[in-house]
Length: 152
Image (tube, rainbow, N blue to C red; front, side, top):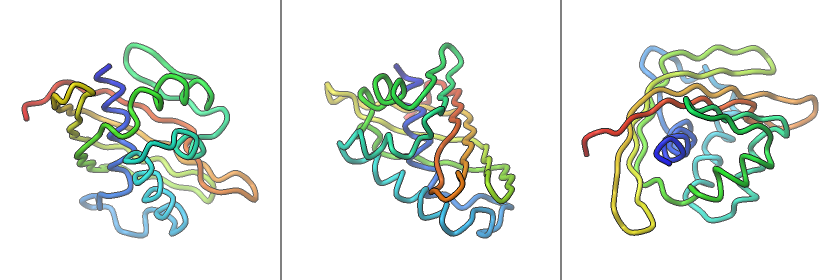
């Protein structure tokens, strides 16, 4: 369950942080806007809108399990976690890009609120792979997370 919260946080932070040593031009303008919208979507309750940021063949990878395909990601991850992350700090340490793919990797810290009102925190690493299909908008092809409980 905590890995699910961590993965949620990655999405939230990806749109917010300006990484050290990585210039603002590291992300194409359209992707920067998509990342902001994706982050905002985590604070809402519209699962379908959030799922639309994932490619049909997207993959979300945690150390102990993997979710393959947009439908499975929406069914398992987005149902459980949407709207629960309260604070996320992502620090991209590496951004690589081509004209149709951007990979960002770094560290993250997040706080979340459980349904029972308790708060928790996670810290760890992430990697996002964004792709630009022909004639389409930027989509997430891969999210990889590895987080552990952190002091609050």
